[in-house]
Length: 419
Image (cartoon, rainbow, N blue to C red):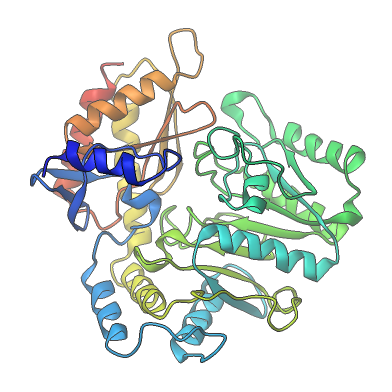
């Protein structure tokens, strides 16, 4: 059947609100390669939106899931628990960059993790307010849309949103928002919109995902920690896209001298299976009453099994070091391409993005879109992001073979130098 026939069926069967980027349909995948129904190969630099740091169908992940499927698929942990859930919690408790006693609970999606982190913070503080940042993306539920700092397409037509939620400015040197500017905007919120004694949590991404891969400066994170400590506010770090070796460390929070109270995680935690988590200080995590946290599919047994394998693969294949190595190669290639429209290359490890401006210095979504389309025509899948849509992000599996990565870099540099 032709792709156009399946495309027509998609339009008839699914709502237009589910936007689709590619005009082909996947039938097979292996590591960093996708195949469509005509047998054409694509190099996958999207990885399911940063879900496949260990690649498509990693043999160890597949074996772990198959072993679990031979035992049972589901019981609901809240009804009949299973040891593997507890073991995974223990492993994450030891790995997250939070000192002292830590506890972890599991859910299915990143939005669920963020939503429950807010619930936990509110239960721990007895306060309602939450502060997020411009450019943030935290999910598509009502609460997480409220936290998200980008209107189109995530919030358009879906209000009113959960409250009280406020947005401070996120520091962004390229766009002339200093750390001081960001902190002053926080101070303005606490002076004019909500008192600090009514704020349960401040949530931020150490590297903004959908917002454009802007990196939180260390002095900004230190100031957030101090602000939270002075007012008894819970500091939540959203590591859903930054986690599990993407930034060259297991968690991006490890780049900072201060610790969060809660960390949300999902995406690459389970190698393509739906699993998310909230980990944090035990005293805060224990605030909700029994029954206050959970979900029918929360901590799905096959996904938990996959996550154990993912943690093993990251350690055994030294994917944090490989993320740094590949990211350095990509950064060098982009900066050396001689692209006049290239405004900046930035990121940690292999969480790298390139931002493009037009000849007048204004953000150019058209250039980013053109580069994306030209790459796709040559069999390379890229994603755009950013408030203006003028940023290309590179989210290849960290397990990508070196020759294939070099092939992708050649495609990228050939296209980028034309702009």
